[in-house]
Length: 150
Image 1 (cartoon, rainbow, N blue to C red):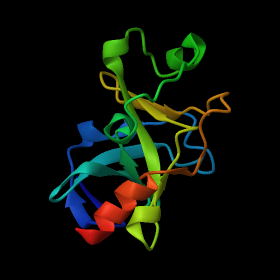
Image 2: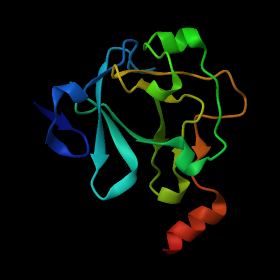
Image 3: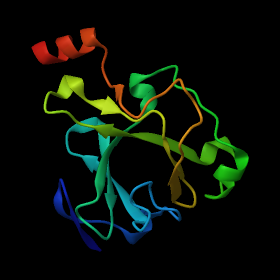
Image 4: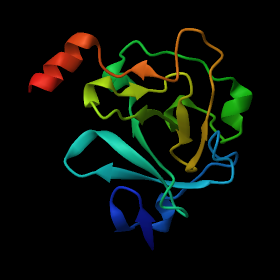
């Protein structure tokens, strides 16, 4: 099937790639069908694209690429909502907010997006933690300066 996307134009996807977010994503509760798309020539960021509305998409990343010590707990009853029974089923990504100056981009560590890799069901869970923010700097100042120079 073909879908229109915000960043990649029209793309062909296998319908089996579509993930169901039964509760939507906070702020987009009525948008429940998403697909994860690769960004050409980029293995760090991906696009979480709504399958039904080209205007709803999010840049996401694996949090451990940037934050090796990222750690959180999600209650079992929340994981049960997307049928997660064992850790191997779980995939985690976080939404990135790109800045005009890339080195000032942020990532939402407070609300990871969790997906059941087997059932293709997902949800964004807001942590009860004062340790993470919705606008956590993606790069430290030194990393940002190094990226700006390269």
